[in-house]
Image (cartoon, rainbow, N blue to C red):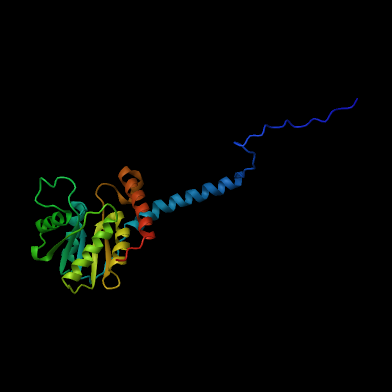
Length: 229
């Protein structure tokens, strides 16, 4: 008895779907992938914070510069640095206060930081406030430009500065300030320690995780931009 050749059912002509081959990982491939992922996570946990919160001061810097928006806890560390160094002046930078400006006499963070440092014991004649423009983005760059403008306008003989800023913000500030001020002015960096999370275990707090993730993204953005004026 002759058997009929069975043919595969013919699919209707449909332009919305198509058949294609797909590559997937083998068991060995998954092991390698998971091992690489674990290594990246371990490296990030152990090396990311020290990279972002870098401290590399210039021992003979002429001026200490403070980003005025940092916490009082960080400003206290700037005060200790000023006392222990041989700085001629301490400059404070900062844009307008966004909340509470109707309740206080100070209208920008530069003035607030300077008043705080004066209260701690820095003589008034050693303090220079530099208000920075209110910008939607690139505020750190605006601060660096305002600092350079102040130094140029006053014809100050400044060869080097140390910049004090909040912990994980340090590497980004250092990058931007160096790109704006160098080679005429050398820039050192001092990362103030945080008070709201443990920097050695930043991954155990929501504040630490948010800070590190946001600063990592911001640093990559800063790295890809050109900050020369």
